[in-house]
Each structure stands twice: as structure tokens, then as C-alpha cells.
Image 1: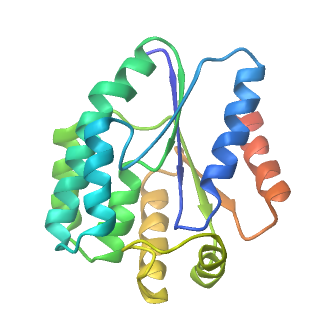
Image 2 (image 1 turned 90 degrees about the horizontal axis):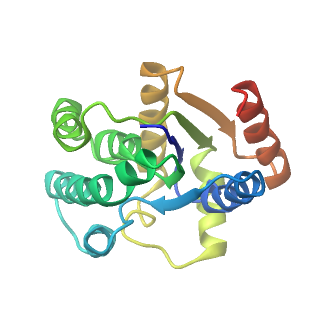
Length: 203
């Protein structure tokens, strides 16, 4: 595949949407075809599954299976075709989020998640994962100011600390793919870190 796959990860309130939009503008100004998408979601089927995951109570296995079902449709309908035609794909979350939220946050078996990961998208991984990291308390304050909470956003601070630790473990396992961005700073300082990482990779 000739395209470039960049994911944005982080707990709710980290500012992913703002910086996805900024990066899309930067790349389009340079003539790139850019596809912006999200997970769970990105297709009609995946968006319906997203609503179930965010709003309906369920156990961790059901949650993981629905997320991976949505991901399978997303990968086949959007991600692989975009990369095959040479587009740059910017995705708000991907499989790292499942290991962080269902694995870290819920305490679900990481070995089962790894097996599902292999079934659903095999060797496909992002070229770059920008982890917008910040303390759980800061994220909670931002969320409270921004919107009504969904089922995940209503979880306590301990849950989000476990999610944050889940992201740290994923970064430790794939340090070349990850870039940790300090998202506790103002948005201009966060964007400067993102630009510096892209320049480091000559992108």
C-alpha cells in the first residue's frame, strides 16, 4: 500500500479532533489527498455499532467484539482502499484504543484482544501513532466543559488512569511507531510537538 496511515490516540478530552483537523489542513495545503475518519465508526455499519458501544451497558467481551466488528468493516471499506490509492488516512483511534480501554480500563485479557487484532486486520498497523497524553484529572475537567458524557466518559478517574497506562504499554511495545505528545499544554504547544514529529520523520 502506498498511502500513509496516521492515528491519534488518547483518553477523552485530549484534543484529538482539534489536531486531526489541523493536520488535515496542513497536508491538503501540500497537495495530499487526506481521509479523516474515526473509530469506532467510519462506515454506516460501524457508526451504528459505535452508538451501541457508547450508550448500551454490556460486559467487556461484548464491548470488544462490537469494537472489532466495527473495525473490520472500517478496515475493508475505508482504510485499505484509501491507502491503496495513495491517500493519507488520519484516524481518531484504532486498535491501540481497544488495548487501552478494554484491556487496560476494563482489565480484559490482552491475549484475546491480540487474537482478534490478528483476525480483523492482520499485519496492518499505523505508520505513526500520535498519543496525546495528559493526566486523567485534566481530561475530566475538559470533558465536563465540552459535552454531555457518554458511557465511557462517565467512568471514574481510576479507570482513565488504567487506560493511560494501557497506552503506555502499547507505546513500550512499539516505540518506533508511537510519538508521545504532551497534551496538557495549550493547543499551540501541542501542535508544535506534532509538527516537530512530522519534521523528524521528513513528512
